[in-house]
Image (cartoon, rainbow, N blue to C red):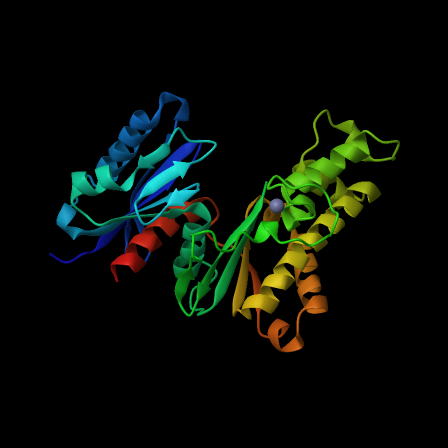
Length: 314
Ligand SMILES: [Zn+2]
C-alpha cells in the first residue's frame, strides 16, 4: 500500500502535540494534550500512544511510512532512549521501542532543536535551501544545522550547542558552568536578569512599575521609549547577533532562520542581528546568507518530528 502519511510527536514538559501529516507537511489530524509529567514515565508513554491512536483514526496503518518523535534531551538517539530531562519523568527510558512494537512502523527520535531545524528546512522558512542553520532564542539559545541537505548531528548528537559559544571572556556565569556564553548575554533569561538588576538599582526606568519583570516587559517598555529597557535590549540582541555572525562565518549557509520567543519581540530583533552579521562577517558570506524569521512557531516541534520521519525513511 502506498505510504501517504507520517506521524509527528512533539513531546514537551507541559504538552504532547501529535499529528498525522502527509508527505508535503499538511496536517490531516492533530491533537494536543497535557503531559502531566508528574504522573510518571509509564503514564506519559500511554498518553503518547493514545494521541497516536487518536490521529490514526480511520487511517490504515499500512499508509503510514514512519513515526517521528521530538523530545528535550539529552537523548541516546541511536538506541531510542531519553537519557534524562529536567521537565519529563524519563530516565534512561526507551521511548522508541514500545511505539515501534505497537504500530510495527519505523520510529525515530531526535532532540527538539534538531527536529525544529528539520521542520523549518522542509516545511518552513528554510524550504529550498541546501545549507541552513536554525537558531532558537528563548530562555536559552540553541540550534541545529542542515549541511548539504542533511541534518548535522556531530559525534555525540550535541552539535550546534551554539548558546555556549564564549562571546565575552569573564562575562556573566552561564548555566553550563562557563562564563560569557552567548546564552548568558543574549537570551530571554539574560534580558530578564539585567532588567531585574536595573529595577533593584537607582536607575530611572518604567520597568519599576511592574511587580514582575521578564523579557516581555523589557520589549514593551523599550518600544515605548524607556532608555534603560532599550539599552538592555539592544545590548542583549547584539550578543545574539554576535552568536549568529559567528555561525555565519563558520557555516557559510544560504540562510540562518531565527526562532524562539525572543524573535517575536518586534522588528528590532532581526534588524539588530542583521546589523551584527553585516559588521562582523566576511562580505562574501554576509552578502549571500539570508537572515529570516522562523515560520512554524508552535507547530515547529510537531512538523519537525514529521520531517524527521519523512527524511529517515527516504
Ligand atoms: Zn554556557
